[in-house]
Image (cartoon, rainbow, N blue to C red; front, top):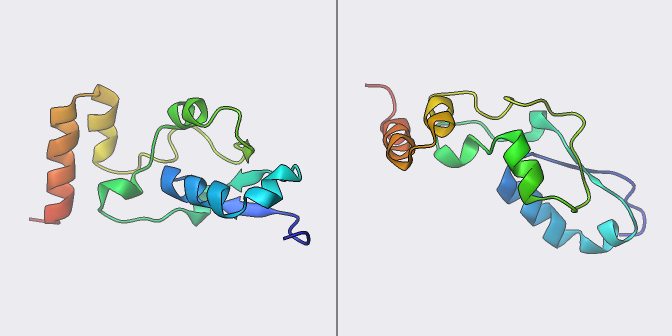
Length: 104
């Protein structure tokens, strides 16, 4: 792991957490994860919608993650966006349920 100079990761929470755990020795050397939106997974599953950037930054405050390639709003690209912004668990559940049904 001494030869690793850059680490790129999807900005989805689960991939950032996996990267942090699996490459801990790299981060102890001062290398940061570069969160890059083009590496994220897309699809209808709610786990692919991600977390709003400011919330993610707050949750991962103090961890070696470089956020400069991301802009607010990059994550919420589909129908879950409005439900998440309203913050209602019922709206989030409904949007998630519809997402898993696919087109009607």
